[in-house]
Image (cartoon, rainbow, N blue to C red):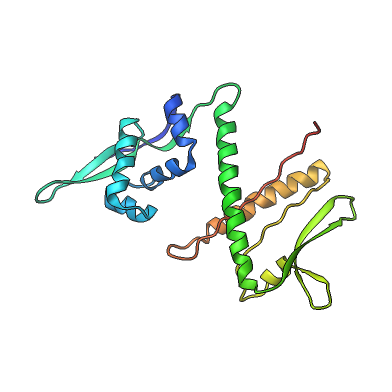
Length: 220
């Protein structure tokens, strides 16, 4: 009877380097919750089984994946693969170099994806667009993407996207000066918002990438 460990902690520089590459790590995702075959995993990740088998062999050799069980059939048995645990923890050093590298790589990848996808959404507006620069009442430089009207005014693109038939797209940055208790309240609301909509996820529906962030900015 197959039994998967709950959590395993790994201290291995080669595994750390591999999983710090989010593109590589995503190939492990199908096997965390339930054992799957090569064909099932390839379908979930949109890859061809022949090329996906490379990752299965690599993960097995590195001790991250194992054969959970085999289904007998005429000819060769069908293998079901599973991660070695439901939760895999990569131990960092005291300088947090692994975590630092992970976040730098992830932010670069997701920011690039955000920028490209957002610009693609702008074509659906079919408007003359521009960047409007001004100052907020708090004294911060404020940059807004706007559609330009015939009389030379700017309407924030965010307002255009709010219309029901326009793409569900929103990107914004905000520099806030908050009391600590207000910042903690915002932190909690952002976390709850993400959890609320994770529960609404439905298979085979449109895919969206949501990026939320709130960090204290230290003076240098």
